[in-house]
Image (cartoon, rainbow, N blue to C red; front, side):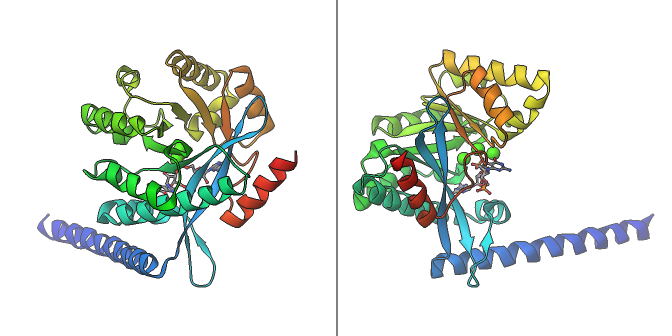
Amino acid sequence: AKSQGANRYLFFNDSMNKQAVKRLQIENLIRYGLKEDYFVVYYQPKMDIVSGHLVGMEALVRFITPKGGLISPASFIPVAEETGQIIEIGEVVLRKACRDVKTWIDQGLFHGRVAVNLSSRQFSLPFLCELIDDTLQQTELPSYHLELEITEGTVMQSPPQAIETMKKLRARGIHLAMDDFGTGYSSLAYLKQFPLNTLKIDKAFIDDMSNARGRNMVDTIMTIAHNLNLTVVAEGVEQSEQLDMLRKLRCDVIQGYYYSKPLSAADFSQFLQQQKQQ
Ligand code: C2E
Ligand code: CA
Ligand code: CA
Ligand code: CA
């Protein structure tokens, strides 16, 4: 039994080492990327379900490798969250998103809101509001063009504190969206207390609309959200059948590959010009 225990210890130690090495590699890559400015922002359109017009977009971070390849956030955000590098990445994303949107507004191509994701770490920064104020000031973007996406998990870490921070942001004219709704710890009791503008239904629920139970679920979420006067965004909409069902359920806004994948700033600029001509 003793030797088995030792073996097991060795086994765990080995796989833990591999994980630690991988984590360290990603951490180094992020540090390098921050120094060399390899983080860029992609934009995914959000469309009004009734008019089919663009109402806004979500800013999504990408890592551009020196060879021009794209690394998706799923592979580096978890590490960045752990190391705290997400704070610096988040600052870069916010600054670039505000700068790009300011350009599109000045060109008369856009007048809506850009939604930027806030990680838990960022959301709990004591100087979050000051950081956002500074960024808006430096980029000369009026605060009413900004929306922040915060996950259920983030606000549920400490609801009273979250409400306080959210109120400060709202006082500035910034809109707030609850992201990935339904994936975390149920917060129905709190939902009405959070000063939100928007509720984003997670893609998992949209995927599940192929069956009646899944459709009922989305219907229920939609009813609750509308009772609370929230705008509902369905994310991950890929098929026209999903769009039809969401329209029947009176969803407000859709985001997904059905309309467009996330686009580089240059491609999004083209997208805006096409929209304008319609
Ligand atoms: P999220 O906030 O839920 O963002 C939506 C994700 O769904 C994006 O993945 C988007 O590309 C993807 N998506 C949108 N429509 C469709 C669709 O029709 N089909 C499918 N299969 N996928 C769709 P992405 O860009 O890879 O980002 C993944 C996650 O990484 C985000 O999930 C968000 O949690 C995080 N993330 C991305 N950018 C940032 C950022 O700047 N800051 C922070 N803190 N997190 C970020
Ligand atoms: Ca999001
Ligand atoms: Ca989401
Ligand atoms: Ca999601």
